[in-house]
Length: 471
Picture 1 (tube, rainbow, N blue to C red):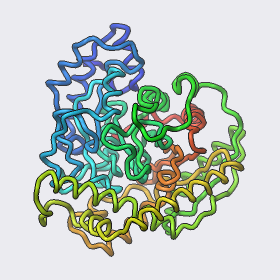
Picture 2 (picture 1 turned 135 degrees about the horizontal axis):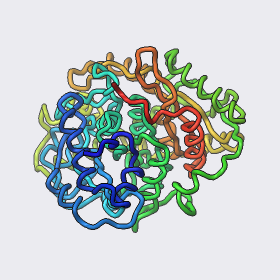
Picture 3 (picture 1 turned 90 degrees about the vertical axis):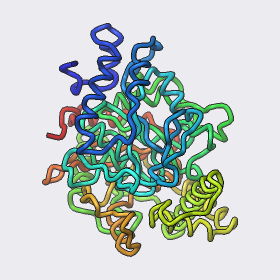
Picture 4 (picture 1 turned 120 degrees about the horizontal axis):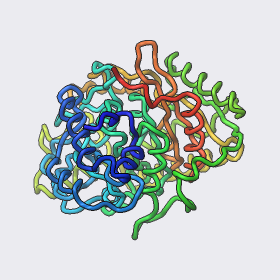
């Protein structure tokens, strides 16, 4: 057993393997032992495949910065021969015959995949409590949520099972678990990391895939491993020259940062989240950045309706595709009540509704692009409150009025960037009086992940968080 396993990030583990100080198999055994010991309490991993991982760990690796590092993949993404359930009973027996493109790139980078992480059904919730697998819990306090929809990934990394794990983000699902679990969570620009081969874009371009990690440099290294268009992709993010890992150490110009505390849902922001932003703003000012209030202008009511239409349409397609493959109608217990509501909404929409929704989010993207002509970055809370209790956002014992009222009091800052395609990052700069992580979000112009990584590295050096772990 490597005594320093938890003290190393992915790049640090890979360096030990590369230098012959340990082996990929030994590192894998550390990861699997940690996961197996704690998964009963945390419920972050829904499927282990240790034998296949051990076989991979003893094979030769490419000469890459992450070679030999253990990895987990969210249960929304295809791995050949492994069930991809989408956290849903409807898809419980769905076994793909191929890898997703991002899984292919993970293998090409030399990562050793040993399991899949829990997600709410179809990634629809900001807590991770699917009926199929049960709730994932936050290692900082197991009575609270780790966020969603990449809650399994966030909990596993926060609890020290591995230094980084795959995550996806259709409305904040990388940044929210990062904020709840004290991690770094970068949502890349639309088209930066591939979505194929089964779809050209996830959730009509609103979804992106990357990782949650404990260090900024790991996030940069994984972006190097994943980014770039695949053959047949409908579009790609602006071309990036060089290596994010190498270039995020370059000097950072002094930035003009807009602070926005206006939640998209119009709800009040918890004092802890305001404090987190105020402290982050002061830290940025201490490094010479200019910080002032500022907020992009767009029609928030139309925007909210448009994003709901696009998500509902995609959920309806996913459910109907599975029913067609099974050759039957929807049954009562196939999907959760919240998902059924979205399925019914999607089925009632017209082609005109869908086309209009796309126009609205494109107009919103143009509005934020104009905003970033004056501002380098935007600083916001990630969530409207610290992590809520497990069961507070229940999609199984579902009362729509209660769920919706609670949802908008917790979530309300992250999905704008999904609609506009901008990159955004959550960094762990604050903990509540109760000891729960409270992340803050920085947003940059479309295509500019590098500035986010540079600033995150600067903040990480000024106020380190890597050694702050759950008790």
